[in-house]
Image (cartoon, helix red, strand yellow):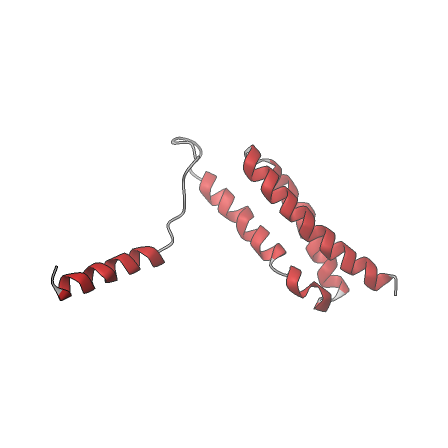
Length: 110
């Protein structure tokens, strides 16, 4: 293989590696057209809610109360998912909620 073909091959491979392709494994071939959109919706909300755990101690009481409420609103959406997804994300959501609640209660007790 000559040098230019190798460079092009590496470039194409790198471009394919960088592009994120959503996995449809385990998805039914037929179903509501917005099924993937619904899942992306709750996952985006989950990511948004649980992304603040590392800065929980710096958040205000109001922000913590809001995050706890958002966790509570998100729970039914995750409960509607298939079993393995439900188990994993409900546990993670519960841990996020418990952390926010703990920080909030520790501030209120002072």
